[in-house]
Image 1 (cartoon, rainbow, N blue to C red):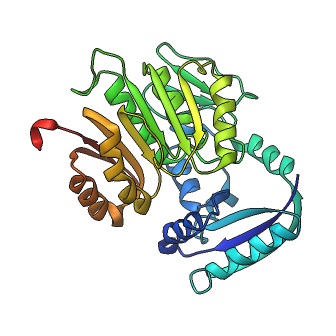
Image 2: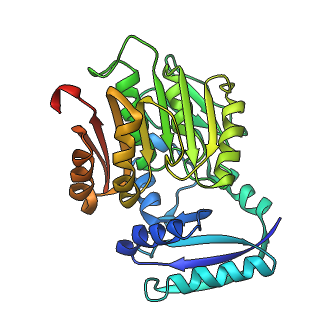
Length: 319
């Protein structure tokens, strides 16, 4: 499919607010080129085991983040591109329209850089085109990220997986002996629901507002032979969803986590868990307050650079 690109250069402090503006206005198919991601990879070479890091990448770490939106190469797509550009007047450092490309080219570039990576104690993510020799105890997720967010490479995703490992893996008082249901809000590629199922969850529901993400998630669920345990569906957070879970996990952004928290409390069973990530350190306090105001008790906060993940519990004896 032919498409056009709108590249939006933003300051670091504006990256999350601009993403929130775009998502709230229906622009959900985007790619985030944040130099901090490359910095994290370079600072943790043993974790990522990438073989393409070089001096050119190292010298590129100080540039500004870029958000890229994709639009169909037609009249309707041009109108939507103009609407997105007008929304960000005064918020972006630069906005550049790019000529048409082909989405197969974008997917091919992903294949150059997406390698097997360990994203938790036991979870390893590998693309279908890469071989990986699993170590004892490894739980391997095979997935191709497509154009949806959530390959497991970003710290926000890996912290969610670490939280799931704690709860489902029996490394905290969270682990229960009975069946466990998981609700993954903003499921992206489905990686968190897949990880939860591999870790022992009996049933998982993934929700995403991006139809492309839902499609990619369904493909990854089938690729990992978990269609009997996981369902992915279209939705705006939990609106219209009738589902009670033992764990609600949401790798979103601070503003969306705040908005989601009261609904998450209603959707989680007593003594259940709420794992959230995508929270910048400067937003940790306000998000923590919103989670506590919703009724949860915060049990731990994980850190990865400037990113935070909050693990909270619905304790009935704390009410």
